[in-house]
Length: 434
Ligand code: SF4
Image (cartoon, rainbow, N blue to C red; front, side):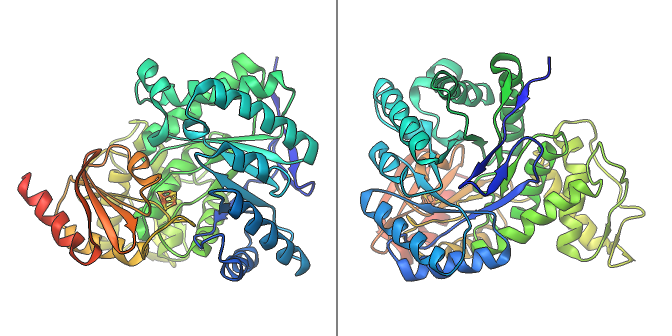
């Protein structure tokens, strides 16, 4: 028997799942307590076509800020559903259930004790049912939690198992307005985790909850777009995924057109199962996204080792050789097949970000461009950054008040150093290890 595909409407007006069009969403990087700034950013996101907007909601104070942001947006006629992003404080999720249109929780950090987490989650389900609020169970590879990793390792299987525990609770409580995500910065881990979860929902639960796809900490520029298109495009091409977020360390408004381009590329036949064999493109960005959706999945799954650009065009002209070579290098690295430049993991930033992430990340990239094979993370905050930077060799993590902590792997080695010195110290640290 076919598994039931669950569909519902967020805020009673935005349908998700069950074959409805794929929703494209983004997240504010303003402080949620900056009401004017957050409203302005939400306004720009809505104008750019965001279907859902997420805001950092660290605690009860931010729940009240979110309430005011929502009130002002609705007064302007902007009806885009707002999602409260919760980490570490289950009580903030409970409070947000009557304010936000959807509450995102991370099973890896919902509460310290598993039994407490389960009890609080049941309470959340009951409140969300009462208020018509949806939930996202948003697990990240970098924040699986010890209880799960001790049993299953830091693997796609562990990610699937961790989420299934929470979905079983939803089924028992008869709560189905749930979206699930299993993000990772490694495209292979990300694709495998979603595939495992999809099969488990189908075979064990007999119902498929809507899936939110994304590659976390994808970085920016061409690398960020290519990595996102590989991970998201691979799954959309297999019919997996109902909403997507492209996470870029840039103005979050930029995420919307990239997301739309990925969805359009798949619909236009740019996938291994589609009708296309070459890329006909309007411009460079269009070309790299379509090319990543077309060749990325087969590279990722090792069905091919390389690809030909013969017959592909940008703006009607053959792809210039240098551009083609650069795209090949970036795509092969995004698919984890050949490593020709440093690997960057950078969070997109959010209301917790403690410094100018975008310019710092660009400066780190500029000064470390020669370090092929080294994996460097640049993270906005110390609350989530160290966990989320997963398997980076080195990490640059904002501490606030103009200070940074540098990590070797998961170990902080230079704590709370002035930001002006931090990139020099990072280079010294890497040099001392080589
Ligand atoms: S790591 Fe980055 S995106 Fe994640 S919570 Fe911290 S600042 Fe926000």
